[in-house]
Every structure is written in structure tokens, then in C-alpha cells.
Length: 76
Image 1: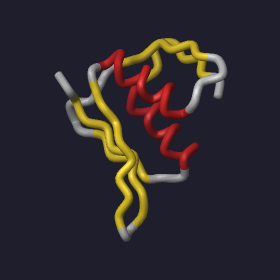
Image 2: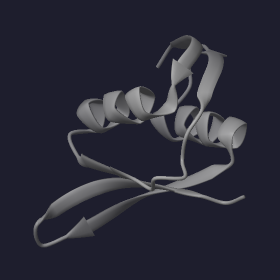
Image 3: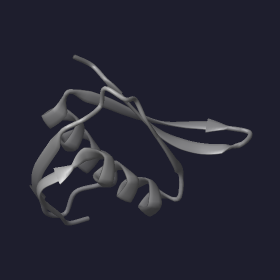
Image 4: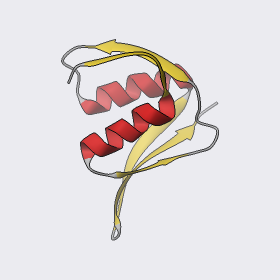
């Protein structure tokens, strides 16, 4: 995966990842900010790690009987 973002709103970035991964997205209200990321040949997990590193969040994929969700919460 190639990722090239400049001052992108994290909510938009996480929404794009949820679409790419085919899961719903759930972002805690305190997860905010903008990210600038340039990655070549990265996995989706590595790209999400970098996005979250920049704004102080963590992410996980939760699987429930109702489907999977990308969940992002603040770690600050």
C-alpha cells in the first residue's frame, strides 16, 4: 500500500481505511487532528500504526456477530 497524506483530517483517513478494509469505523470523540504521512509498500496495519502514532491514538479491529469495526481511541 502507498499512502501519501498532507494535513489530512484523521476522521477522513480512518473512514477511508474502514472502506478499504470493508469494516465499519468507530472513532472516539477525542481522536482528532491532522496527519502527514508518506509511506511506500506498507501494510494497512503499518499505515494505521503511523497515523495513530502521530495523533496519539490506538486502533483495533473488533469482530462481533454483527460484523467487524475499526475502532480508534485516544491514548493521551
